[in-house]
Length: 305
Ligand code: BDR
Ligand code: CA
Image (cartoon, rainbow, N blue to C red; front, top):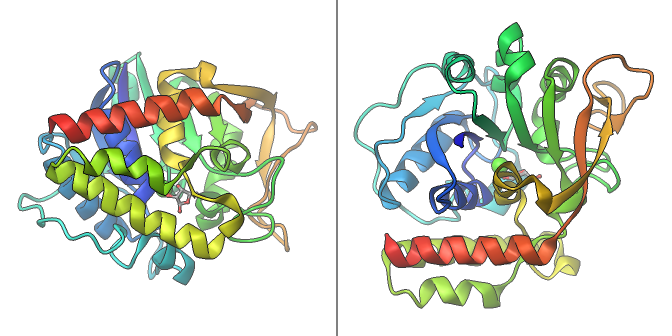
C-alpha cells in the first residue's frame, strides 16, 4: 500500500514516521507538514532531518497551510520540547522542501487507488483537500485525533489535534467518505515505558540512540502531565499501524461532528441527526499486538539504519 503522513513533527509523529519506514507493507510516497506540536516550518525541518537520519532523504516533504500568526502552545512545547524533538539536535536539511501539500494530496488520491493518508496534527490541509470532490469521495483517511468516550487532553472536551482547527476537522467529518478516527479512546491505552526504550539504545546505532532520547524526553514529560498513565501515549504510530492493519482496533460507525462554539469547542461527538458519511471511530485496541509490532519495527529500524 502507498502512504502519505500529514505530520506536525513532534515526538510521537517521529515514531509514526519510523513505524511507516520500518513497515515492509508500506511505500511512503511523501509527507505533508501541518502544525500543532510545532510550526509548519519546524515540523517540516524535523521531518526532513529524521528522513535523512533514517536513510530516506529522497522522500519529499510538502509544507501545508497554517493560520497567520499561529504560535505553539506552552503545553505542546513542554510535551515535545521547544524544537519538537525533546531538544535532540539533528543536522539541518540542505535542499529546499517540496511544493504545496494540498495539491500533492489531491493529485496523489487521483493517481494511487491503494493510498491511505494518515493525518496526525491540525486538520487544516486535509480540510482544504476535501473541497475537491474526488478527494472527498475516494481518499482513505486514518486520522489521529479526537476523543469520543474519554475526556480531552488540552481542554476538558478537546483533543490537541482537533483543538488546533475544530472547523477543519468538522469539515473532514462532513465531506470525506472514508475516515477512521483514532482518538484518545484508544491511543491512551497504548503506552511506551522506560523499560521498552532500552532495546533501541542497545543497538549501539545513531538511530537507536535518537529514538531512545526522544522517548526519554516524552516519557519524562508525561510523568509530569499525566503521572497516572505510567508511560507516554503512542498516539500517532497507532494511527499508522491501523492504516496498515485495521484489525488492531474495534470501531463504531457514527456520523461525527466537531463542536465549534462555546465551552465544548473542539469536542468530537456523534450526531445521529447529521446527514452524510459515517466515520469509523476506534473505541478499543489490541494493545499487546500493537505494542509488539511497534517494538519489533522500531528496533529493526534502530538495528539496520
Ligand atoms: C496528538 O497531539 C500531539 O501532541 C501528538 O503529536 C498527537 O498527534 C495527541 O493528542
Ligand atoms: Ca502529532
